[in-house]
Image (cartoon, rainbow, N blue to C red; front, side, top):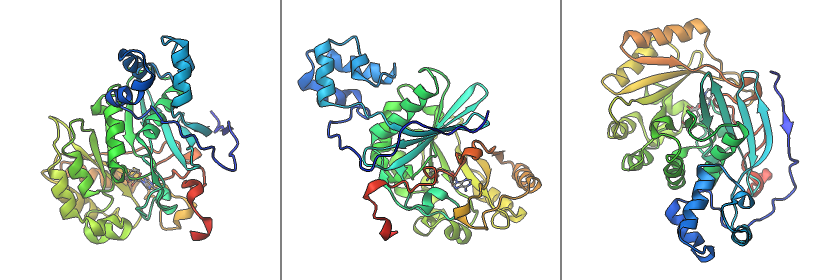
Length: 371
Ligand code: SAH
């Protein structure tokens, strides 16, 4: 399959403000409370909730089990915040990257990654990112805004529909798109509470750079997803250099929080480790990494760095043999380590490449002169 950009909608000069409340991010009790004034009977809220989240209906007119007058009333007062697809690109390996335009003009990306009989959706939690990791293109563009719970849920519903996936199919969901999920904790929680009704929590993973208060908060959640931590360096000096967040939450504090994160039986925390040639790929760094994770319920996911013109010349992936040697060295220390295959990189959908197809993801609020 050829990479196929499909432009489905021109970018307008200004967003149209829509002040109707969005129902997509609302739990059933909240939806019932919000809709109470327009519903004739209390069970209607459950009917609408089921239509949206179990059947994927994103249009009041299509909720034909409701009386016509009620559908019209709902459409007048509320919206189902489906996202406008600005562009959808399908990679030669089947990975589909979708660019969504949000009502305020911000743009975000979500990725649908097929893998034999499995499917992984990778969604964004913020439009932009404040963390400025040296190897990440999203961070290069700078801080954006938090997505609402509805905007997070809408990505999943949109990918599901565009990808022809019915509810109940084996689906993995990873919060590894644009943004830092733990900088948007409340909306992340609301979205996960909702999504966990149709996707098993065991198949939902939140990836973080290691925002310690966020990890501590998640540890208290009733519905806890899997945790992945972007580690990328085995010592504070190097980690602080490539990930500024480490200056705020150094490794000792990070691991103290991770060690308190409750894990179900057989579960482990995933440590993502980008491999950058000459920076963090030496055998002694594999040894250091193994030492750091020794005795912890951990698995390592090695990711050869995806280069990008905006990142400069230093972001070079090591040769395959070096990646393999690093992996084998971890094995020898008794660590489980996998190497993440590159997916969708011909349409810039690979890890760290999400940047709204080369646009500034932050939307109309940003004054370009201030950059
Ligand atoms: N902010 C969270 C969620 C984003 S996950 C986090 O960083 O964990 C995106 C993953 O892709 C992270 O592990 C990130 O470190 C990784 N990544 C960023 N830039 C990359 C690049 N150029 N090549 C490969 N992986 C990259």
